[in-house]
Length: 80
Image 1 (cartoon, rainbow, N blue to C red):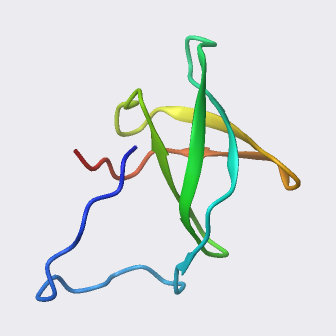
Image 2 (image 1 turned 45 degrees about the vertical axis):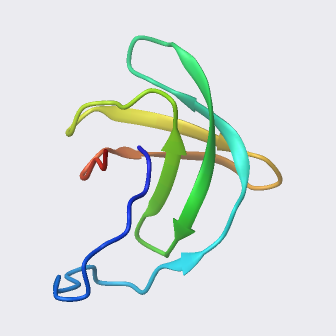
C-alpha cells in the first residue's frame, strides 16, 4: 500500500476528491498481523495508505489512525 506518482494522462475515476494528508497509525491484516502505516490521501469514500507490507486486492483490512480511530475497508488498488 505504497503510493506512486500517477501519469497526467490517467483518467481519475474516483467519486470523491482525495486530499493529501499524513496521519500515522497501524494496519491490521486478515492474518491479524499489525503493521505501522501512514495515510497519503483521504476522501469521504477512501484512503490511500503507505505501509511496508502490501495486502492483496480484495482483502479486508482495519486501520487504526491516530486521533481518528478505526477505519475498516477492502483493498481495491495496490501500488508498487
